[in-house]
Length: 101
Image (cartoon, rainbow, N blue to C red):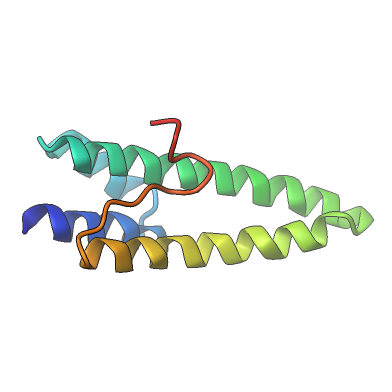
């Protein structure tokens, strides 16, 4: 039960403390699943921030606007999918970084 709510909190942290919460869960938890998920959440947020930053620079020449929209939507939708999967106790990996960890 603790693992289930820990996963929900890690996914939901994307909306309030996307760096601090995964780091705290990684350091304080003894469960491998929680550690794996916290690293994935942290990496996903970092990758999305970099992609949004690059898209922002490219939007000056109008190429980056569609990418900016897609990456912005992904930053919101992917953690919500993770929350739903955690609530039904289904193993789930973040897209893009799920296979790195």
